[in-house]
Amino acid sequence: MLASVADVMAGIASAEGDRSTCEYPCVLPAQIGAGELVGPFGSLRHTVITDATRFLRPGDVLLRRLNPVGAAVFAGSEGSILPSINVIAIRPGPTLLPDYLAFLFDASQILPRLLQRSGVESVVSSVSPRRLGEASIPVPPLAAQRRYAAAWRASLCAEEALRARADAHVRFRRLLGDAAFRPRPEKHAAESRIPKTATPKA
Image (tube, rainbow, N blue to C red; front, side):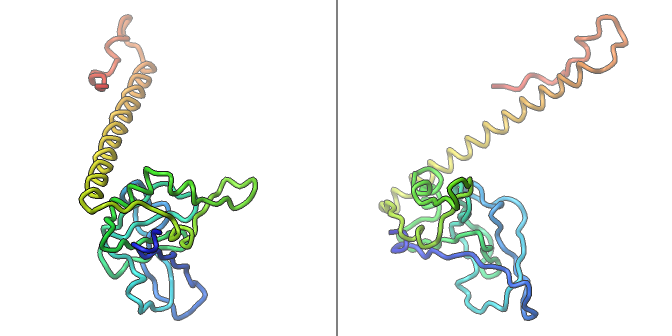
């Protein structure tokens, strides 16, 4: 079980009505992408937290509790950031690499098997820390985990490069569309209005 090789922790809810609260930076569900966090941190109010294990540490693996898609590895500073209420934090033990665990959540069928619908007709699915801790995962030697994680990271980088090229094609088509509506000062000026930028490479 995952709980035998990692600590699975629920996120923390805000306590807005309590006058004795402090404001803490937190990770929001929308920040969790494939492999890494994106976007700015949020904030939540909570009574003073003295348990240092509640704060995120570098290497913690983060999942969305609702409609989880992939996982992110926390690489920030230790001792100041909290997981918000709809974020689950997994702290791998010494036999489990963070990138390997994030790879499993992103590329295997672990999450789809654990998801629960929140209603018969609901499109919202969720996973609980308890069910996540009960999940069975393969734990090969660390050397094998590093190979899986490295291949996964390389694939993510290649996917990002393909996405950037696709975006370049979209921008190029928009330039062509804009050029088609520019005024025609000359009888045969259509070709002169076509952007000089070379067509993006496939």
